[in-house]
Length: 330
Image (cartoon, rainbow, N blue to C red):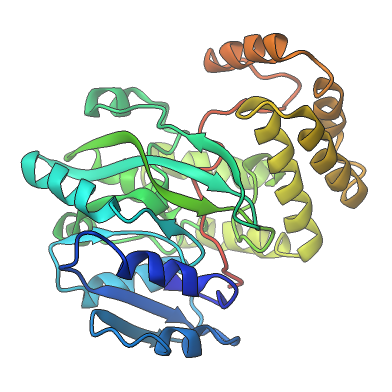
């Protein structure tokens, strides 16, 4: 668990691990230079299974690589400091990988919650079997990062997380590993992933065209230069303003309440908030109009979306949320 200024949520996240039905683990928390009460909250737990690593603020990829170097177990379960694991998560994934040892990465479905912990929708993987995963477009991340359970040595042998792949270090890693290793997604939700406006990773469509161009180019060629990494970081840091992140958060909620959990009144409420914050974001006006369409029509658009249909740039729900790394300000 990497953690940066996660004081609002980390207590619940830690408790969800300590309450697992599977008990033979170490909870390795990498404190990435937090300046709030994150470290104090971690230390308030009296459990010998908790291991704390402190480092200067270097970002999520560096924190994860640091954790991998110190981890003693052969298997790694990933999640963020504001997520909540269901009590059976570790047992389900451990049992699966032990009975199917030819798999290296095990993902799962997730329940997405808002900042208050209320359910937004249940995300189910775009692909389950290894063959289905391999057939996904390179632009689609096959796993929700917080849900993965993988073999530590395979990730270390691949060089760990690429620290130049700003906000998509996991996607970059999977693309590399899946050339040689097998993976599987469990449809069952094993974790609650919290969306909040403090997230470092905003909705893909809020990124600049240049950012997306560099990202997809590096994923396609499976290499990234120092120059490309610097460009991604510079663009991303410019978008770390509270206004942009808050606008992206409400826009994301608006879309999810249209496409994944048809509640048009909630969708409109959130879309109006994002338009107030960013009135020039034209696609959100389109989404606001679409919130008055009947559910059957929206479902039809959803099915068209699975065929790579895009309505005036308003992306349909195909792995929009695959790059979440919450509570990072680096």
